[in-house]
Image: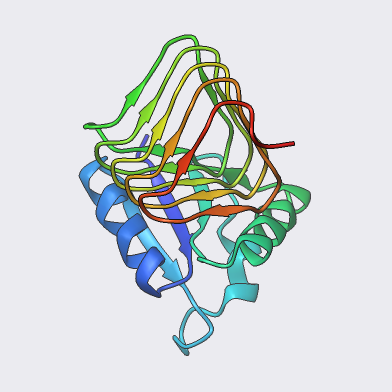
Length: 165
């Protein structure tokens, strides 16, 4: 059975997701309201047993809203992990997430739905990353932290131990 992926969004993040999905061997269709042939609202026409979906929008709330909409319609969210990323077998990455090249997710960490774990981001042990978070390029989340729903941690930012609520 072929693996089909519907990417919602064709902006910068959508192109990044496309690149990872292509490397993972997916057959890809892009939906975007700027593309007259494939508007976002047509997503439900693609729901089938061999098809997964990934909302690829940089806006955290918008991305998470689309993920919820896809799930309510019966669509299956994808989770994409680039082959060069490391995810501990004792970590959990939820559906709708994209883990980009060079990212590290250490033991005991839980990544919520619809998160972006960007290039080279490091998430140390026992971190809770809530739904819709974007961890930007080469940020570092030290152990035992909590990153709140739809928060964005900027490129290169270091989150010290237990500084988040």
